[in-house]
Length: 126
Image (spheres, one colour):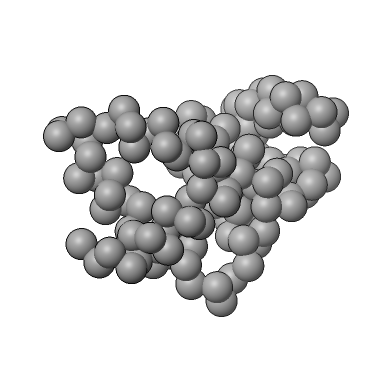
């Protein structure tokens, strides 16, 4: 493991998803899941999010599009919260969901709207 990349990833991950959420995931990891938590923090967040060629707002918008296309709604909800933290507006989230509907189908867009509504209501954005 690259300790510097892990530290960078941990900082990026906490900044987007929240320190409490990230720490809870790390604290709840065991010998079975901890290696993945460490690798994901290093690779996804250190290497991926640590590359500042793409700003965090744009990266969040890309993630919502890709995760929405995959239909991974638990992750979509987490990243929807992170996107709001990174400055993505309600209108931008709606536009992203429109694109998901066009390319991935109406049922998937409806799922994204359902989850987005919940997250936006929690953040007093609706």
